[in-house]
Amino acid sequence: MRIGYPCVNETLDCTSTSTFRLASYTDERLELTVANNLRCLLRILEWNVAHGLLFFRIGSGVVPFGSHPINTFPWQTRFAAEFRAIGDYVRANSLRISFHPDQFVVLNSPDAGIVERSIQELIYQGSMLDLMGLDSSHKLQIHVGGLYNDRELAISRFIATHQRLPEAVRARLVIENDDRLFSLQDCLRVHAAVGIPVLFDNFHHECLNHGEPMAEALRLAAATWHPTHDGVMMMDYSSQAPGERKGKHTPTLENDLFAGFLRDLGDLDVDIMLEIKDKEASAHRACATMRGAGLLPGIPAPVAT
Image 1 (cartoon, rainbow, N blue to C red):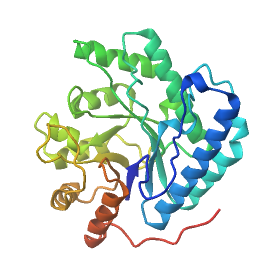
Image 2 (cartoon, rainbow, N blue to C red):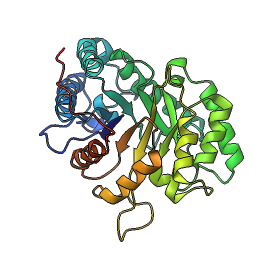
Image 3 (cartoon, one colour):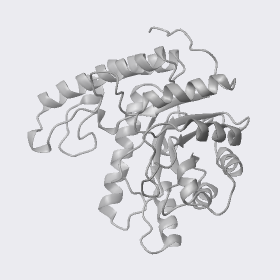
C-alpha cells in the first residue's frame, strides 16, 4: 500500500513541468526545458522516497508540446539516459508512477480531430513510461469523456476508440469514475466490454452513485484490476471542501473522514493518490494515520542507483 500526491511538490524550489509559449518554440529552448524538468522530477522522487511517499503522479508537461506537431526534436533519444535513470530509481525504491492527461484528452468525442489529438497525447505520455523501462502497473488515467446528450452512444464511442489504441497505450490505460457524468456503474460497463481497469475516486462516488456503499464500491472497482499486469488498484482520495460548492476538493486532509474511509477499505490493498490542495503535507498526515492503524510500515532507507 502506497500514499502519494499529484504533480507538484510544494516544499522544493523547482517544477518538473516548466513550459513556454508555443510562439516561443525552438529546439534549443525545448532541450533546456526538458533537461531542467527531468532534473527536478528526480529531485521530487528522491524527496518522496526519503519521506515514505511512494506513489507519484507525474505532470503531463515534462516535455512541452510533447504530442504537438511543432515538436520534432528527438527528445526520446536525447534524454534516453535520463529517463532510464529515473525508471531505475523508481524500480529500486518500489515507487509507483501514474500520469493523468489533461481534460482535452477525450476519447469519446464526436470530433475526429479531438480523438486523434487525444490518442497522440496518450502515446506521448505512455512513451515516457516506456523510456523509463516501467511495466504496465504504471498507469495512464483518464475519464470516459463527454456525455453529448446520449449516454449509450458516448460509451459506445469510447469502447470503439479504445479498441483501436496502440497496445502499449491500452496496457496502461485506466478509467476514473467522475462526479457529474459517468458513475462507477458506467465505468464497470466499459470494463466489461474492453477489460480496462477502473481507478476508483471515493469523492466522485460520493457525488455520483447508484446507492452502492463505499465498502462495496471499493471492492467492485478492485475486482477490475488484474494483479499480474495491472498491479493493485490505484485510487484517488479526497473529500468535500467545507462551505464550498458540491464537488470542490478539500484544501487539507480531514483526519476523521480519512480514518472512516480506512475502515471502509478494510483489508483491500490499494495505492492511494491524495487529490488535496496541500499535497505532500496531507500525504504525510495520511501516512501517519495509516501507520497508527498498522496499515503502513516504517519509512525504508532510500536505494541509490
